[in-house]
Amino acid sequence: MKIARLWSSINGLIECQICERRCKLKANDVGICKNYANISNVLVHIGYGVVSAVESRPIEIKPFFHYWPNSTSLTFSGYGCNFYCPWCQNHHISFSNLPISSKRVMPGELVDKAVKMRDEGLCASFNEPASIFDYLLDLFQLGKKHNLYGTIVTNGYFTSKAILELIEAGVDGFSIDIKGCPTSRRAIASIDHFKVFRNAKEIIDLGGHVEVVYLVVTDFNDHDGCVDWILGKHIDMLGPDVPLHINRYYPAHVWKTPPTSLTRLLEIKQKAERLGINYVYVGNVDIEGLEDTICPNCRKLLISRRRYRVTYFKLEDKRCPRCGQKIPIKGRYIKEKTYFF
Image 1 (cartoon, one colour):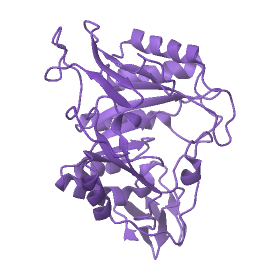
Image 2 (cartoon, one colour):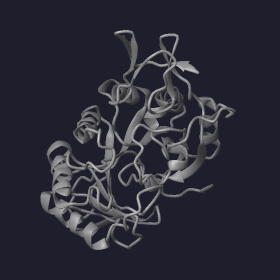
Image 3 (cartoon, rainbow, N blue to C red):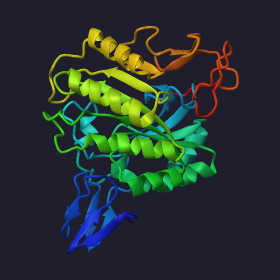
Image 4 (cartoon, one colour):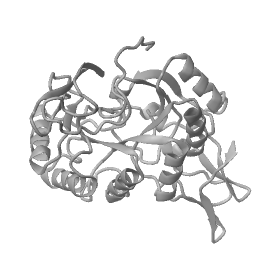
């Protein structure tokens, strides 16, 4: 266990300042993420080093399509969450309490494993990384010393202080899920979805790389008003070059509405492109062409992907070889590699 970095004492309570839930804890209370507790009037990361999964995975599966193409990251997770979406694919760890007898994995062990597996980087995924925030800071700082990139797959509900700490620790890749809009009230009703876009903009302003994932959930965030709000905020706050992944939902956990129709996904893609978003992908459908990168200027095919791997890559110094259009790519393309997953 470790004393947390971001908290304050307010009117006899301890306020956690890692995420915008800002849990206020009495003595011995545990926050909503189940990883932070008020112990002797100090905020303690009780889940430090409690890891639920570790494996080497392609960066494209996160999804990151404009970040270190064709690389792999040592991907890991803890337990707990701060949202608890009822359609969560990983509810077995996100909704779980911390295992009492779990062995703690120290940051150095993960870094050593990433180097051994010849991964280019590290990625916190599967459950919400905010729940293991202080562990992330120590891990990514150490990973940076070994030339490992730092990425997280997140709902983006951090405080501004936490975002700055993550970037200073070495996190420069953020795959951010936008869950809904102000009129999405059937689930996670207490979430302010605007703050997710606010945070994404702050990350970009600080030099971080952002890709937005819009999981289109049937009967929650798939109606026209919600689509228009999400796409409008994307173009107005993040700009045309931030990639947008429009992903298909499948029933999971307690949310049993039908999978998103392909027709609806394509309608949203076309609307996003009409608004001026340059890089729009449709995921979780495994249809050739829907995850390709096309030059927004001359329409040349630049990158093809299939099943989370790059199958074709044609950029010259991160520019379209036909018209010279600069394509936003962070990091370098990994052309050849032996994979261990």
